[in-house]
Length: 614
Image 1 (spheres, rainbow, N blue to C red):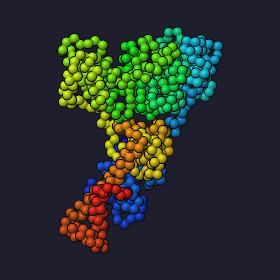
Image 2: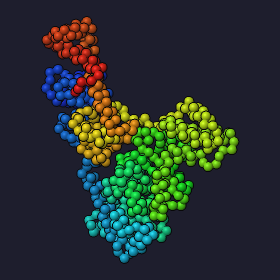
Image 3: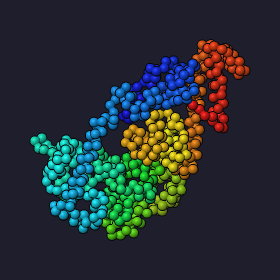
Image 4: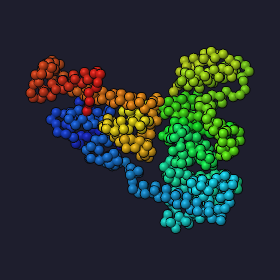
């Protein structure tokens, strides 16, 4: 459970704010004097159903539980998080100095191991490894140095003894993944022995893990660090730190399966290549890559293993398993393309040639393969079709029925029409036959991918933030807009960080960074920067109108209570007096002013230009 949501569930908003200003029930909301400015007439409302509060008086402040604490205690978001976590009895591991020191120590151990293995490559015992890298793999001294490649000498305690002399402890070495915690009665020993070492860095360039390649047929061929507190292979892509600039420049990232398949192309000048590490492309990988480029190309061997890997990538990325769920995959692929603007493609390589070999031996073939990469849905569709033509009408019908959900998943009518045409030609049937089966499939009502609805923004605040995060070029245009546009403290902090540095706002590992990445992945249509700005302006207008409606609803509840206590006739008399400007003195003056305000609020919602709202 997200720590912010957990705190909001455990700390009652009305009870907490009620400590600082008395609140009275007013319909479904609570009303009281604003604790942030001096007033005699209550204009401060708490809305427990929404989890928000707002002052409709002089200060115009508002927000959620966290923003209340920020303003009340004069702290930033992290300070409010600490205060409320203590209130809720929740321990914040991220803010625990001991844990932070522990994480930094693990990263330092991996970095020290990288340096140790790098030096061992230059020792006489590392000659065979150096020869393998330079002769067998064709890597230059500059590439070997740039990627900090190394050699783990044969032996059980070389690295352990080195790190002990540097002041690190054995338990921390085990936690960092460089030692194996042996069975009872044996001491922990070096994980990597007699292997070429390939350091693994996160997207910020910090070493978090190691990979070791055997030279004499050892199993496994590649040995990776285990999952640790600083390394998760489902969230880490090898080479991203080195490829980031090229990916941004080209708007495309090529995903391969091997470490050397990154190093070879990198040396040849193809710097936008990254690799997964023993896993298919995951949603976390896709979200990470989307920060750098909209197009992802899977460059895989055309053999069964390579094509299965492409399907496996689709299965994890789009949430399906096996060909029987291909329609779900296609729908999810199409949904992801719309939601996150990701263009996933598959580039089958020439038979028997991995990316490293292809780049070395036939660079034009590599470039053709990447340039001609198929959209994932197309790849899936024609993989299902196969090369053999069906021989009977029954077989044709069954195949068309199997393909129909995939075709229906393609939202663009032109693209779908082209696929229908190609499918019809392959099967030797009229296009109308395929179209008729599609109509039946549409009438059956194919269900949307389960996560699709959850990826849509739920209101103008989320849409506005998603637009800004997707279009960092708007930062100057909105640099003077108040953070109070957003109700939630997390969303305000996202906006603050976006104004300072859009990229770092998405890169942060805390709750705010997580929320920023979630918002950036929401379903939005592709827009130019000018279109995005117009859309953002409309959302700001919507936000102001929504706050007016909220104010009007709060006033309506107050007037409903007055009508029950004073009667409709007296309220009508007060309304007439207010309209004439004959506002009475005393306690009924507040009601008269509320009647005037409620009337003006109702008008302002329908005006062409929405007036500023607190």
